[in-house]
Image (cartoon, rainbow over all chains, first blue to last red):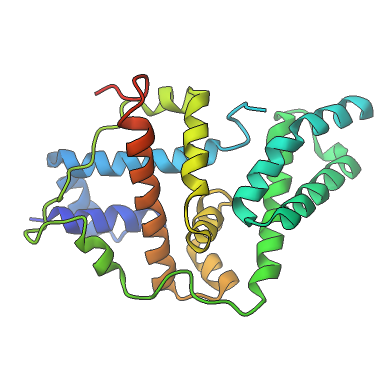
Length: 61
Length: 193
């Protein structure tokens, strides 16, 4: 069973390169049952989304 | 869009563009140059602006290229690694207990769409990016703001892949902590669990 430490590492890795299938599946499984790591994954997705929106679409002057 | 309107709009957007360039180049003169080149390129190739996208989106896209050019030029000068190359394991240590569990479980950040619609959020976001150490910020912005792949970044900045990973990891953790502290943890409209 994957530990959070390992899952965190894979979530970070996945931000920059596709994971091998076996690791991807193991991570998916961990995220299904671990609230902390799935929150962390969402935080990373959010960071990326915020960067993509900034500054072209944030509509400030 | 006629010339006059384009000039007016470009002038109106200039402060926003300058702020974006300054944030990434961390150098007033270089930021001014990049924005100047961007506006010049925009005004001389305005047929490139089909009107499909907002003018600011178009200008931002041009500016991104100009910023990458500036960073490339600067990267040719001898440089030092973005961070001490002491491996990412050390970075992970502080986040986790010896048994492999989170020392502090990451929080739910609520509805991302609602946050991203909130204009005030970007003030906090920008402030958090601004306080990143410049070497870390440079790598992070090449990746996330300018959309380069990590191997391109390694090549441009002449740093190792391992160094690039560690640097990106640090930037993300710092930004996460900053947003947690200054937005999600304190902003009444920011969090909905």
